[in-house]
Image (tube, rainbow, N blue to C red; front, side, top):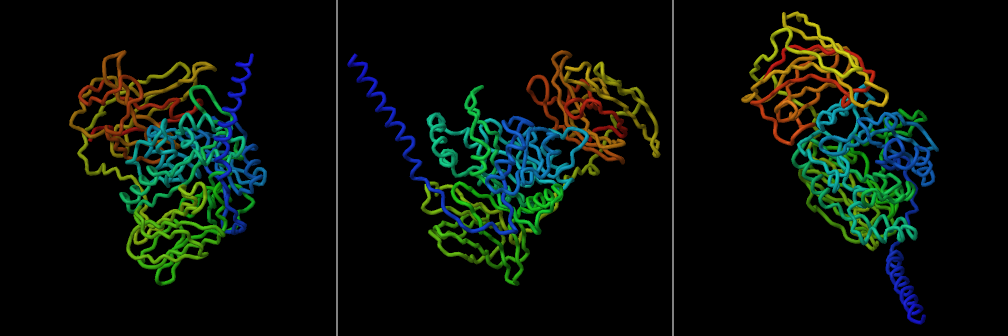
Length: 565
């Protein structure tokens, strides 16, 4: 009995020591005080979160309620989908907070958050560049999400024109923590949610390097950095095991973005959303680890030698001037100014309320601010967007260069295609002539599921013949439709029953448009994982299905000049 009693006492002592060891570090953490009011020309909000519209735990009322309790001005909702129609349509004032509807697209290369796009009557392309192009055409914004996530990293760094990338992802960082940290996380969270969440963050070295390389490699691109929460109000630990925290409120206290606006937000939610999105598109915002301290009062701008002022994210043709940094804080800070990703000037333990850094020479200049004596002094408390000095922003566009290719006709006869479809869908073919006496194939279709519980549906123009495309770069054609629709052009190889299917999407609308789609852009979506064998093409399809359209979609597409280049 005495042995049992002693064992119990020793056990309780060990537990007490462990509890103290886990909780004690929390007392070394202190959120710095900043009594400055938020200037009227800045709006503070949070970016990248999920609700019951996809895989989040809460409703839009839950997230806006949490945002309101913390005095936030806006919330950018990014539920999964291409797009998530409920999420994209959610823009409204709710609980006195501007809710900006957006989506997180699951693409071949990873995840891309997008806002400010028009909700189409079709499903966005899974191909990164195609999706980016459409968002840009609508004057929207898109950011690469959690680019170095351990499960869903971004892989297509050849894509161009996106607005920027998440330099710090709270959810992605949390999923990379060690088993020991994960084990003590719940207890630390109960004592201090701020400390427990901050302790999951590291300096985002890989993300910072990639962000810098993007701006170095694409000098006219102007890519911006943003802190993303990726809040779900749950944390998947392993397999099916989930922790039903951190809460939205706890997450909203960690990372914020401060967006500079040129006027007060109007009562119309759509108009207010456009103002925020316009500022994001220009890079006129900075990101803050709010749990270290609020950044109310921080301001940075470039003033050239003529007195012209350039805001964050902007560019100047004049290569000389000064970077003005307003730091109205009572605590010490370390300021690092970088040019082209390298340290340009460092100010240690700064207490000046206004710093002026002389700038000379072209490059992109960014600012990182650290709180000197804070427990988390290694984390970039404030991250500015770059000032592009001597580097003008280029308009982005995809050039096909098709006019420089020699074409080989592929379709030059009626009966080249037949229709294939599921039982609930329809499809018909008609032939005609263009005003240049070219053969025009018109495909009229309707899409429906076979049954209420069904998922797949399709209607296809199929050419089941053997082709040798070796020696050619890609397939070319002209197409138009009565309204915007997204289609696939597909190629299949291999024996029947063992085929591998490859495809690439294209967007048609009113008016003839030339398409040049290189075979290297075709990607495998079914079958054995191997490279497309151009000498052994067994069939060519032009298709529309549940991967790029909704049930009930009806329409037609006209095709001509189908060939190779």
